[in-house]
Amino acid sequence: MASLSSLYLKKDVLDVLVKTLNSKGEKGVNLTVSINDESDNYGQNVSAYVSQSKEDREAGKKRFYVGNGNVFWTDGNIVRADKQAPTQKAQPVQEDLPF
Image 1: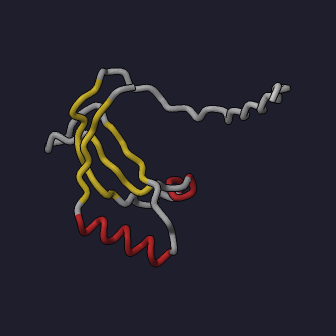
Image 2 (image 1 turned 45 degrees about the horizontal axis):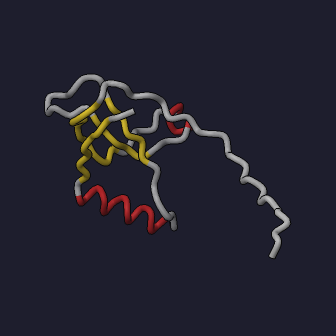
Image 3 (image 1 turned 135 degrees about the horizontal axis):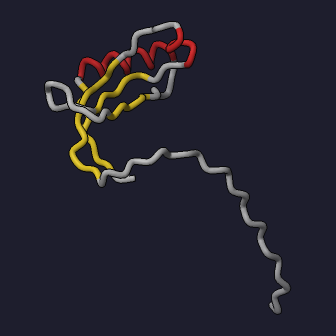
């Protein structure tokens, strides 16, 4: 996968995010980034919003958008990033050393 996008976040939106995180005692926020095939009237096809739970989506809760932008380069091949199974650490080999 190869794609580069720009995303613009306004200072007032960042202030809201930081205040909300501080009031809830959270360390960070999960964002969902959406890349559309077509651009809007402003030449933007990337948007970002605070991630929602399945329950929030099913309840029709409004998304809190944090920024918009555009894809400015791609190789035309974007693939889904699947989680890899955790690898086991190799056991140290015990050798009989002559010293």
